[in-house]
Image (cartoon, rainbow, N blue to C red; front, side, top):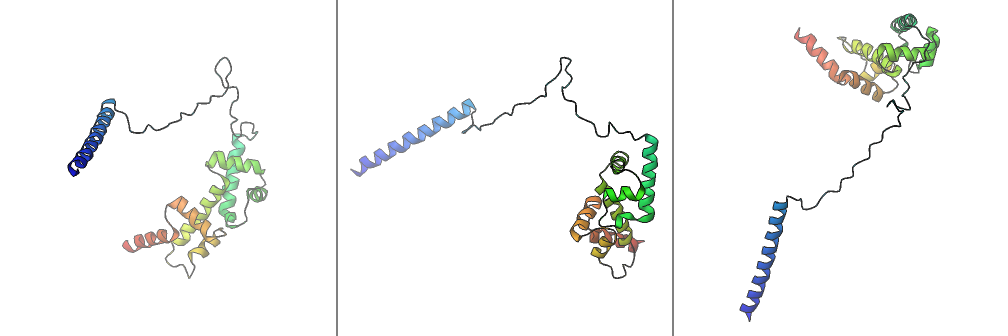
Length: 190
């Protein structure tokens, strides 16, 4: 009886093995994956068009309706850069584009336009670049006279350590501490 049970188990195992082999051969021949992934192709949405294939809705370009002439742009840009350099207005932690516009007597929307078009960045990026430039000068000094990196950040116009560090890394790809270490290394190797 044990031989009969062994033969039954052997025939079952053989049948399963043959079935698995047939299934694997079929997959290889048909080159089908075991499970087909379900992929949904997103529909392409095209805007409605006029008969001559021009889009019905044209994107509005920024400042296309501006009455600011090229000469005025250059004049206002010079006024803005001179004011920031001389007065170091970027040190004001509460500086806004409105405050700056009032100080240089230029309409706020023109200040925004000039920074965007002539300098190629936003107001906040421009002001932070000015702040970081001065911070780099201060960090490059041989002696910080007891000032911490946070003190330097606050002196140039940042309210918090985190915004100072984030801006510094954004424009220099290093923290203020790493920047200072590199500067001191260069000075010591001269």
